[in-house]
Length: 548
Image (cartoon, rainbow, N blue to C red; front, side):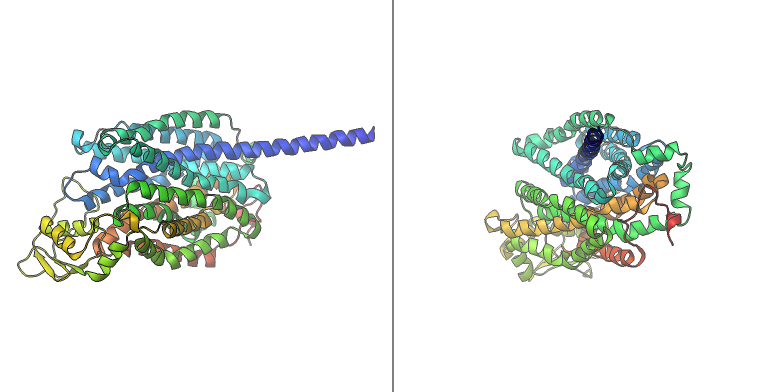
């Protein structure tokens, strides 16, 4: 009889373990899948930003239009911290599940509406205004999504697998980016350029409605986080999570340290390795879109499993040291890696730049961060825009008396702005527009892109577990969301716009890399000095009052 009782007890324990394992996998799958679709929605615009420059902004200065498209792209990132505050507060007061169910509805609806927008040619300046409005809605929604998904998974995960379990959430941004690339690439391949420009670009946005319905269905089946439920049942929840998070010491100190010592560097490494690399290939090196999307897509496929690897490794050796190591390696190697891309993708451009010095003499150049009815383009603007558009570095020198602009290409002087003469002079000097695919070293190019994605996985794979462990349950959603979204939304999301502006202002195609390098170094220094490891903390009982 005793043996039978022991056998039944063992069987019950085994079934319980299997049930817990099944629930854990279901939580990871449902949270991750919904977040993949949300990132897909968000990054459709990011991938099409250079294309949208012609659709939603006036013609006349392509660099200025591109920067306007990037500014619209950045608007969604700038508003993400406000979404973190709004939805983080709701998540700490009402619950994790309810909040990230609402955020995905906002995101999917706004994305679908982008696919219905009329273009600049149809309604003029109302087109970019409406586009910016929808980008702001997307940013608000994403500001609440990530913190909810990461917190929800972490609060379900076993202590010894928290880094591993939350690393699946970390794959979602890259997988969403990959899905956006795949859908856009398929649309462009199966349509001619005219058809895609007229209406085909809308298809990826329309598809988001199907993804939204599927995501909502899955998330409705989830249960609330057990740690949150226990906290609420014991009456230990925060009544004012915003005040407790940002206006009470020491939590406000940890919010600031999480931003400057972890997420800021993580954000710029993420966006450099994926988006800036994409734009550099397309815009600067003039590689065709099919080859670019394919190269980036392959690098994402190869690199994505490393999110899981570094999440798992962070359970063994710690989160912080992996994140800071990624920032260090990235800062040291970005210049040679991007110079390597130029060498292996467009060697003709590299040779031309080495042999032909370009100077632009003028004083009336304007810095066009966002194109509007107020924008006026001088001859200097047009000359610099043209050179930047060709992927060429140039030196800005003082104006010559009585001359609006003087462009010197090698030994040839061109007074005033004359595009045809400039094009002819470049051609005579040996410049070739577009990368010659027969000269591309595909293996080395792919290797460089994979290396940069590995950097992304190092800094991003452990970050969710690190942030969750940094804050107590009562204010976890609010506290972790704000530094994450400022670090990724402001420091990281502003990277394409900031780097493009730095390149346009200096005339150096690599100068924009100083932005992610300096931010990564700042994070390395602050994180090393002021932050400590978190992997051994019990998030069920952890509170800042426990610290010495």
